[in-house]
Figure 1 (spheres, rainbow, N blue to C red):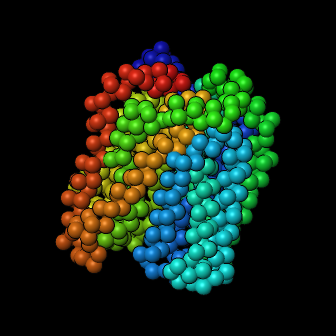
Figure 2: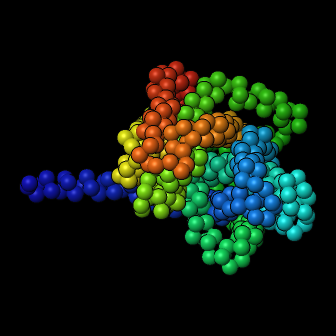
Figure 3: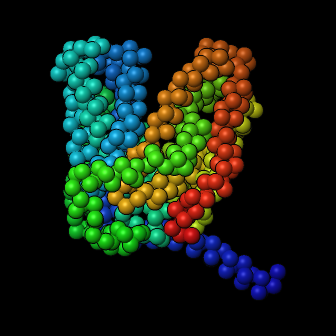
Amino acid sequence: MDKHDKEQGKDMVRSALRELIQPFIDLAHTSRALLGVNISYVLEGITYFGVVGLLAIFFNDYIGLDDRQAGLMVGFLTGGITLAMLFLGATVDWIGVRKAFLYSLLFMLAGRVLLTASPGLGQSGIWHSAHIISMLGILGIILGYGIYQPAAYTAVKKFTTAKTAAMGYAMLYALMNLGGFLPGLISPPVRRAFNITGVFWLYIILTVAGIVVVAVIITRKAQEEATQNSISQEQNEEDALEKLSGKEKLKFYLKHFPLKDFRFLFFIFILIPVQTLFAHNWLTLPQYTSRAFEGFVQNNFEFFVNLNPILIFILTPVVTALTAKKNTYKMMIIGTLVMSVPTFLLALGPDVYTLMGYLILMTVGEAMWQPRFLQWVAEIAPRNMTGIYMGIGQFPWFLTKILTSLYSGWFLMKYCPDNTPVSELNTESMWLIYGLIAVSSPVVLFLTRKWMMKGFREKMQSPAD
């Protein structure tokens, strides 16, 4: 290799590194308001996942519910939040990002205080006073989170530029998964010292910290500065919706309501099959890794079950930096394909290498498409309707959790039953079926690409294109 070839090789490496690093540099120079959103999102992610991880045991030990009843309470919270986004997403569009954050966090603060204090405020047992109070607490969390999540993605749309949008959405998604990982480090020592209620009080303190972050960092002045260089010139104009009467606002919403857009509905619902793999992370993987394996995997199955969130935190920004200039719809096809195909590795049988291959490749696929999907939903929304579009965009996720929970238990009982020798299990068939379900999403996205792109060609382009 001569000197010229070496110089060319060095230039290629430097160019590739610039392509990878530049989106991070651009994001680092974004607004104070976006920084506040990210800090708040980390705190809320820690709190949400930390509470959910202990909630069933809390209802067992402190409210006196059995496993089935406690599971229903966890479902009430997780399913209720997704459903609340459908109805409360528009709140962000009506009252603005800052107020939406503050109101939602106040709802969650009140709910978490009620939930944590409920054992001492009433009698334990199903439908007794402590149970009723705890459910009121969960209701407060549901109402708050139904506003908070759409507010976060609306804020990213408002506070990013064409250069930083893709990385802004990716970082938000990565930070959510970091929040899902950190309770595993924070919770155990606090729980051993102060029990589960002590952990919940710690998360209440973090909720208060989140309110302070929004109030102090995401000020009105910070919002104005952040929106000066926003993606859309329309966002720099005076907000015409604010001048409309309540009747005129309602008419505007009905005219542009996303449920009237068939392509939008088709797009979000066709993702349900591949999204079932998310639900299997907690509905199937814990039982699979603890029943179908022996030795290290069986004894440390929690490590494998919780590997996805930390991998997502690491991989999502990197994958987004490498693919930010790619067409969003193409990335959806490729990403869902990369996420679904590794499921067939598990159909080869229980093996630590195929398990790790599945977890890593599936996470790479998730990092490729999930943040871009959220970005796409936010960007196709008409001005002043980002919140409601984000809320409805999350509705299939609610259906996914419900539908997957209806059959996952039956599959485990048939193909991976408890107290059964590993040699007598048939997990290969279970994962083969799950793989066929998941891969239908990228197949249909590919087959309908011309029809989908015909009506959304401009809207479905990445802002970096």
